[in-house]
Every structure is written in C-alpha cells, then in structure tokens.
View 1 (cartoon, rainbow, N blue to C red):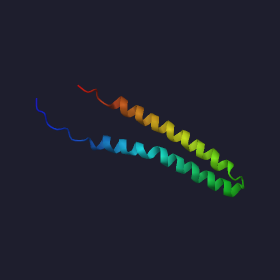
View 2 (cartoon, helix red, strand yellow; view 1 turned 45 degrees about the horizontal axis):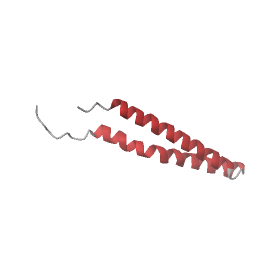
View 3 (tube, rainbow, N blue to C red; view 1 turned 45 degrees about the vertical axis):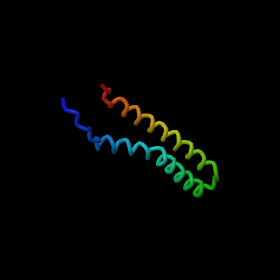
View 4 (cartoon, rainbow, N blue to C red; view 1 turned 90 degrees about the horizontal axis):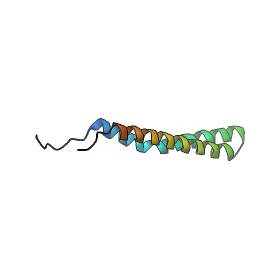
Length: 78
C-alpha cells in the first residue's frame, strides 16, 4: 500500500465549480426575462418580480439536485 497524495479529480472539480454558478445564473435569467416582458407589456414591476421568484426557485431546485448527485457519487471515506 502506497500513501500517494491524491490528485484532485479535475472532472469532479469542474462539476463542483459549476454548482456555484447555478443559482446566480438562474436569478439573472429570471430578472432579464421579467424586465423585458415588463417593458414590452407595460406591467411594471409585476413580471419582473414573478420571474425573479421563479428564477430563485428554479436555481435552488437545480442546486439541491446537483448537490444530491454529488453526495451520492462521492465514495465513502475509509
């Protein structure tokens, strides 16, 4: 048995770093579409608020799913 230092798995590192972008990007998309629809339909600020809430909810669901997948795929420590 050799005690080689473990190299970080670059694939896993990339997946984990992308998790950090899920929530802010979902909120940004909701803000963007809400703003555009409000400008087009003249419904200030209702669609902006609605799409922002939808973006937050969507981002949180995606974040929880990704974290659950990462925890499931993680091998048990010995």
